Image (cartoon, rainbow, N blue to C red; front, side):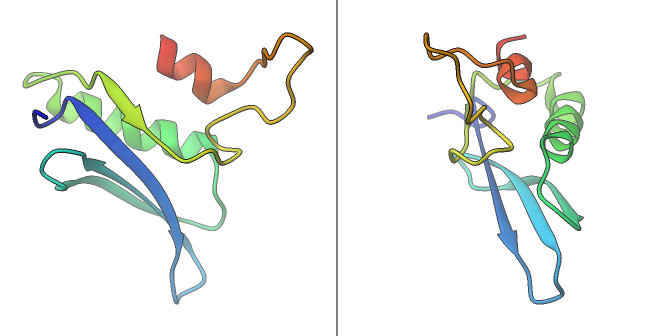
Length: 94
């Protein structure tokens, strides 16, 4: 609803053989950070999010991060209670 209240993160594979990660503002669709990588990774996502938060925290801290259910974002292997130790999930709740 408001700029910087929700961020959308997505990956795509470009024609140059690189993975591109984009962090955009969900309300305005403005690209806030972008990076090209040889592979998809949790570290790349967290680095881009840190960049966005550092740059825009004086305006607003994002309340919601919208992502797909890729392995960079969620632990695929979970225990019988549905819990997993996964870096991005911990980052989101910190």
